[in-house]
Amino acid sequence: MRRFLPRVVALGYLLVVLLAPLGMVFYRTFQHGAAPVWTAISSPEAVHAFELTLLVTAIAVPLNTVFGICAAFAIVRRRFPGKGLLNAFIDLPLAISPVVVGLSLYLLYGRTGWFGSWLTAHGIQVLFAWPAIALATVFVSVPFVAREVVPTLRELGDDQEQAARTLGASGWQTFRRVTLPSIRWAVVYGVVLTTARCLGEYGAVAIVSGRVAGKTETMTLLVDDDYQNFDLSGAYAAALVLAAIAVVVLVVMTLTKPKEEAA
Amino acid sequence: MADALGIAAVRPRRAAPRGERLGTSLTLGVVTTFLGIVVVLPIAALVWQSKGQGAHGFWSVVSSPEAVAALELTLGAAVVVALINGVLGTITAWVLVRDSFPGRSLVNAVIDLPFALPTIVAGLTLLALYGPSSPVGVDVAFTRAAVVLALLFVTLPFVVRTVQPVLHELDVEMEEAARSLGAREPTVFRRIVLPNLLPGILSGVALALARAVGEIGAVVIISGNNPYRTEVASVFVMNRIESGDPAGAAAVAVVLLCIAFAILLAIGGLRFLLTRHERA
Image (cartoon, rainbow over all chains, first blue to last red; front, top):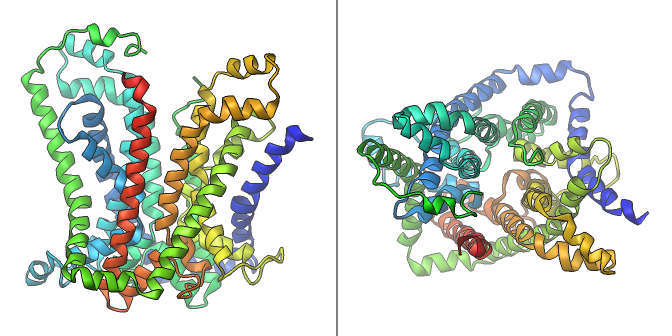
């Protein structure tokens, strides 16, 4: 009996905190059949929210992928002053509240902010429009690719790269033909984590978007908005879409995760 | 491995060729510019703006009863959650590495669910099961217990994921040696396993703490956001902004920022202490 105690405790905990609530949402969503679900997620607001979410994700993911690979490369392979500081600032978005991120952007690009008057004078709308939502999303998803690639790059060592250099390969050739193939699964895993974070960001986006339904509302804001307007079926339907994406993300994560158990 | 054997040290250091130097400065330039625009500039704006109202204005917001209540609840709940996950996360990691049962790899995959699931959906899922229309008769909605539950959900993976790799690497022979010398299971765990896992547990707990202090998405739906009772600090900040008081929001946001920096520093210090024998 005592042998099974840890297993029971661990699985029970996961069941109570993770799995049962998730299953409940699937049940609640389809409680009255699939028709109301379809109505809710094909409404103009929902479609627009979905498009906006995809747009900011499509901006944030490539930017942070390139940044993450460059940053990881600089941290592992190069020596320069201020490396610790760079490391700390890459980790920062993991530690600070999304609300703090949102407020920071609000204070930078808002009417009274540093860039506020310049932007207003030139008629550029950043805050309460998609650029601010994109900026918030990029901010919160900065660390993921870098953090996945750094340990892989470190473990890889630079013997192969040195060999390629001795054989006359240029820096870019070495990177593309030797380094990149070795770190590709770490990059993919990082990209998946980044995507998940971008699709699911709520706190930072809630502050900078202005939350205008059909205009500046992302999927997560739609869930919250529907809930606050007592449209529970709408909230559940939008949440289901996000949860379904999360399950897909989870599957891809499991398939691409750098294998520590294989070692 | 090569480093450990000192092979790397034997290789003569040569001056980097021009192309490589150029590449390095280009990469560094891109990395710092991006990070500067995306992360550092907004944070600087926040700190600057909160300074604008003076120390007195800052203090009067931070020491207002509502802000104090929010910060107390946030820190209290975050510590409770980090501790619970420290214990249960370690047990979960242990089960995933040392135990074997059908479906173990599935359970292993499920651990990452809170990373994949949007936090607002997490809040809604918890409300569906532990809210007013709970099918199991447990209704914690709009209470402090709901805040703890929501934070448990979003911070669950941290300790598991920091302890798991350490447990993998841990040599079973050490434990077998202890057993063969007559140590009982609890002793083996306390004297052999736990000291080895402790760094992993601590950094997982610190990450969970940082995450819990800043969390809003999972909390906002299920907590009810009652000022003085269930309003966490991040919700307080959001409410200040929505009621047109960005200065007040900035004051509490700076407190949250300082807590985040302190936790990052602690993690950095921990890492430094742990790798000292590797660096020596």
